[in-house]
Length: 466
Image (cartoon, rainbow, N blue to C red; front, side):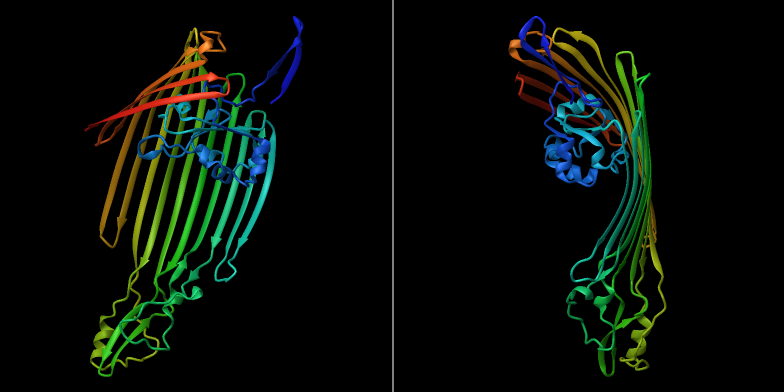
């Protein structure tokens, strides 16, 4: 942060120090609970935003709210709410100038209940990077390996950001035989020439994933507006083994447990394609700043589960003495696959209006209005049950938040008491076919000293069934 020092011409013994805020920092009543400068971020040694967030998770988590917390924090980029963390998660940590973590009370100013903390990423004004990352992992006992390749491009300049990224990951199969897993006792003696079933059971599935993303953002200085867009495609494939078909053959000579179709182990194959897009638009209008965000995704999953073979003909033939119990390479017809499919649609939109319509003796009266809608639909079918299901849920939400300054050192109003701010919030969530949840909260912030802040918050809720 640039500093400037100058002498006061009216008093030679007084030095005035002024500091400029970084563009993108939040200007709110509550001080950050934690701040990381660029040097602090570098000292953590994180290679990605995900690693950085994991390192500061104790500071960004919240213990407030029903169930012990409100989930992940609210993320801002340069002080502006974004549609989804996908918009910045592939940025390198070197692009960040500062990270600010704010208490739960600040969440109300962005249209959320006071049960989540706010994390603001202040980016560098000019930054460019091209990264290529290759990883290879293999345990010392061998058996399987993991590879990952990642390419990314980031350019920040003139109020705009462009980010492109591709990530590939592949993990090879690991079987029980490669780790010496002991199989349970069989119900009958096993033929020694039959294959070891542990070689056809997987401990780690064979997986492949591909993720491609594009992010673009632009700030317009003349109008004070900004826009951001994200598009992401993700494919995940997996293949696991569940052993071989087996059958206990009983005949005149006794019984044996036999393994079938050694060239065709029982497989479970899954493929998921996820299409996602998100964005935000912010524009000042009169005394208010309007922000609208959206986040939509479609996850299409198909899972094939191989059926077990019908062994009734082999059992009957062995019992009648027509099939030698120790006959090599027992084969049965392929029974095919069952198919389970699901599609999950999700769309979320949130509109907020933040502003300070009045100036009180203690400072500006801050207000936030929010209106949002969350829509989810699940479509699924499964050939094993022969049924199909469709479930749809909508959540209409809205709320109002007020922050009233009572005393202020900055404004010189009752400054002997320090800074005192009262806040209040009311909101609702109407869930389709279920009912409406009304919630409210009240808060008090008192800063008797420059370096000390005390917070008190009360929250309540009432449920009205449909």
